[in-house]
Amino acid sequence: MPFLKPDPTFYPSPRDAAEAPPETLAYVAAFSRSADRPDAIAVLDTDEASDRYGQVVGWTDLPNVSDELHHFGWNACSSALCPYAPHPHVERRYLVVPGLRSSRIYIIDIKGDPRAPTIVKTLEPEELAKRAGYSRPHTVHCGPEGLYVSALGGADGNEGPGGVAILDHNSFEVLGRWEVDRGDQYLAYDLWWHIAHDVAVTSEWGTPSMIEDGIVPELLLNRKYGHRLHFWDLRRRRNVQTVDLGDQYQMPLELRPAHDPTKQYGFVGVVVSVEDLSASVWLWYKDGKEFAVKRVIDIPAEPAETDDLPPALQPFGAVPPLVTDIDLSVDDRFLYVSAWGTGELLQYDVSDPFEPRKVGSVHLGGVVRRTAHPAAPDLPLAGGPQMVEVSRDGKRVYVSNSLYGAWDDQFYPDGVGAWVAKLDVDTELGGLVPDGRFFPHGDDFRGLRVHQTRLQGGDASSDSYCYP
Image 1 (cartoon, rainbow, N blue to C red):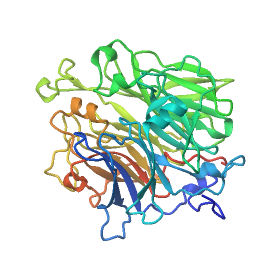
Image 2 (tube, helix red, strand yellow):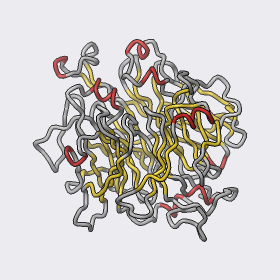
Image 3 (cartoon, one colour):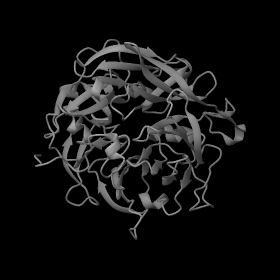
Image 4 (tube, helix red, strand yellow):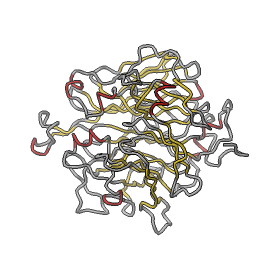
């Protein structure tokens, strides 16, 4: 889609992006757990001057059922300004929206009416399978050479290996499998990179049968879920190093590399330790010619009465924090950590990435606490801060409360509901405060659960930059 000059939402550096105007809309993946109706993209008004601020102002209903929308991304972003980008004049116009359960990928155009985006193309699961050999598409990242889509499963009913497919920027056709040499990598989850150093990083969750019906206790206790990071030559598409965190640290999921392209470090959240139910955040960093890792944040489990716990947790007498998402502000100063089990969003000052310093915390929901939002103080909340997204200027943080359908049911068997909250950030000293005017919840989402949020114009987990 030719454009005469670079898209104004593209920024050459994170420093420039931090000066971007506030977002006025947010897009939220909403899915039907019962699959009795199609999933949808909900559009939220985030313009504080709007009379509909904090409300759902638009929908894009999908034509099929059982997609289970989860993560999604933009077709293009600031990486298009990299000096070697072959597509510098693409627009940030399309949302690329995979169905994690169906393996279908929707291309949704926001340009005509951003409050009523339209589906312009659908990639059926057979196309992903035939051309790339994958299923269960998950993370979408806009790269300079194309769209990178991580996938958890293999094709034609095969459990794996999971990996990364490349889509064309313009046609959205599946070009093929990204990996030339994957080594012994088999499990997959997230993908991101140090784009100026030609380094990609991938993490591990599980194969389709390990996740789609909920967490499998026998597999978890036998340490069968993922526990490694893989480092790749981004250009050569080869696995060049694998780092094992230790098999007690199950499920290293979201990858958040430094936005500063001169840096080679990043953070990954680990869902649970099978030794004490704690969660952790790890730092990866360049140590000489290779990457090393260090556990820099530990979040302990919280003791609880057996009667207050769901059956899955009663044998343990405690609530695990379950760190299921993290996000790094564009200026690389604050790391946000979602503890979905205990219902807490934690904020750390990571100016020194080796020594994070906790500076803020907000409780919402939680397996036991059920902390209410200030806008509805009599409404106990299920779920907890799960997907977290940070505005480009770092002043606003958005959280939604569903993890993944089958997993919601295990940890919140009485129902997880649906809510999205916005938190205002003290960017000088640290600290978080829920915005009492922004709390869409319940029937606002028409009975659908809510997962990832994308901010109009880009956000802290969408763009990569080639200039410091």
